[in-house]
Image 1 (cartoon, rainbow, N blue to C red):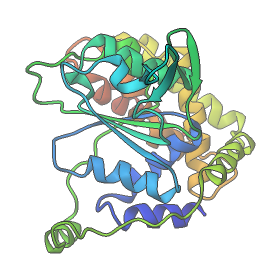
Image 2: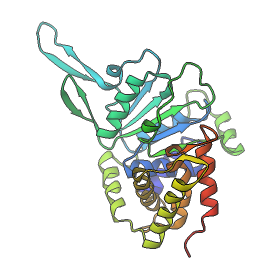
Image 3: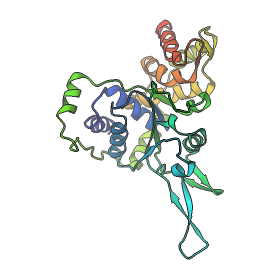
Image 4: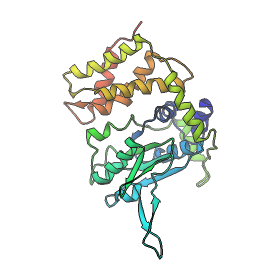
Length: 299
């Protein structure tokens, strides 16, 4: 089923298959994804294709400076001719939610979204409402246009399992994009249903990680805590995230065990936004990549 899911998403979104694998990894690991890239590389297309491929509902939130928390979570409204209220769900009540340009909305609205990501529910007027499962938030932000934005605090960045950059498509993929008739882009058919995806996610717990690979993961985490290029290393929650994501990626690749290559491939997407560089805001990725290069894999 996972190869079919990959093919279904890749048939609509033209880009590197590794990105599709990482998106599926986040879904199986129960995490969320932050896409940091230039406009026009297919972030919305990718999230929509994911929702359709799993037979789920797709929700989209265009983040602006005047967006209120209730616009995301939903609100209680009065019933006509009565003093009673009824809850009207917001766009976050979907299986895959695209939060476009998350850094353009206010911290209060950001917090409402990130709280829902962490808790799997929203609370409105003291009443908790569970969100659908599976539940995957794909948030985007433009790393270059920072005018009029509210950058996410480090503690909130930590809520995202992966931070990815889609990059530009290959020449052949871009040729296919050029030849698409406007409004007639390939559509994604449902390969599984939400319940099946949850069953696949449950199989992540059965994926094995040997002591040697686990030591390799811990060596990398501990290296970030003593590196002079970093003001702050990876927290235990970050180590847990890398451990969980590595097992999910192994499952996506059709294995019941984790290879050192899984940990090394995920190091930058999982850890890069969880450390603070002494030199630049975006320097975490470069330091993590250097540490992975310098750390020999287990025999």
